[in-house]
Image (cartoon, rainbow, N blue to C red; front, side):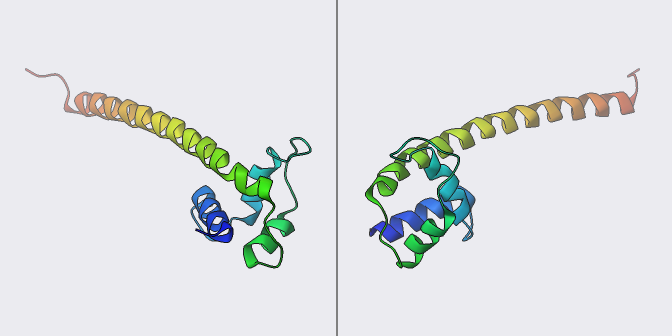
Length: 104
């Protein structure tokens, strides 16, 4: 896999679509070699994407950590969604029982 392909796969994994340059720029900000920042210039990511500029080595090296952090966040969110679904099922059952009224 080329660095550009790796960048694209990481960007698409972060956003789920083809519009990932800004999201990846924000994620890369935390890994900047001169210290964390809110974001890097999204135009740099766009230039890396098109091949107009070579991808900086530190950015490629940061991609696995960025993806792992994103995967961990998604896993946590999935757990919250499972809990909410369980709560909704219990509530739906209780409502259904209430609508049926008391049993003889």
